[in-house]
Amino acid sequence: MRKRIVVLVLVLMVLLVLLWHAGSYLVVNNPEHADLIVVLAGGNSDLRYWNAVQLLQQGWAPRLMLDVFAKGKTYGNSDIDLAQDFVNRTTPGKSSICPIVLNSTYGEAGHLADCLRGTDVKSILAVTSAYHTRRASEVLRRRLPQYHVSVYAAPDPYFFGERWWQTREWAKTTLGEWQRYVWWNLVDRWRSGAVLH
Image 1 (cartoon, rainbow, N blue to C red):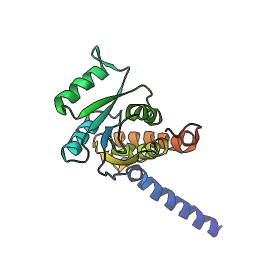
Image 2 (image 1 turned 180 degrees about the vertical axis):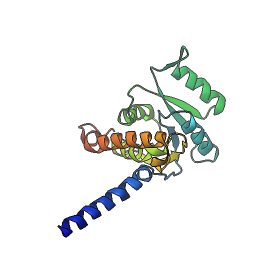
Image 3 (image 1 turned 120 degrees about the horizontal axis):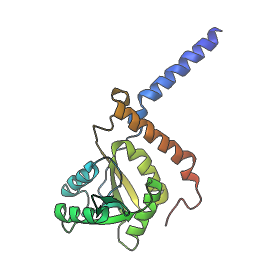
């Protein structure tokens, strides 16, 4: 009986440590100089883009590509047109748009492969929300092995913090990202055709 209690206590301690680090485990921040900065679609605001612009201005890459949902509309305007106008005003001559249709990081990698086909890009610095970096880096490296991929973790303090239990939004974001991360590791990673060339 005593041995069972000790095992139970040890298991509970391990679970508590894992829960404690559930948020920080999601974050990978390893930016490297690259041929292109890619701003992944999604997120809750334009924080990803502005972080990428700052990296561009600091010389991390000479160009920037913004992934935009091709079928999206905002206030009667296509999101592609709005994004094109936006990058023309904020980073004239240094940015392009990659239209995407599939609303998943897995699908986005396929659209990104299409947008990069025929270019001389060999390395990518992907900019995404901090909570999305581990999954994004794994998906992009697996699906696009022809590119060297590094990742920059754009902070979004309203929606995510590594101490996820401190706010309701942080807890929701952490739980949702863990669901997607588990799905990636159990399903999408093993799909036939997962690797794109």
